[in-house]
Image (cartoon, rainbow, N blue to C red; front, top):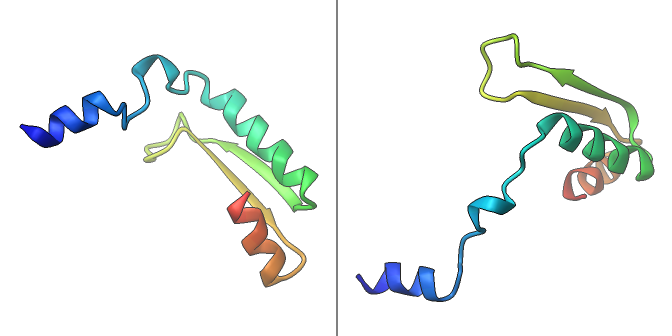
Length: 74
């Protein structure tokens, strides 16, 4: 199939070895970025013991709608 060949030849998808292996560390890293950008009330939540579609979640607020959108983009 030409589509599969294109994907393989152009390395469209990230290699398996480059996947995230520690989501706890990723959550702390992302919370740090939010704090650097001036987020308010940044909280990380460990959801592993709950039945959720994610292992961790982060909640934060911005000083305005524009600030909150900038935080999301970062």
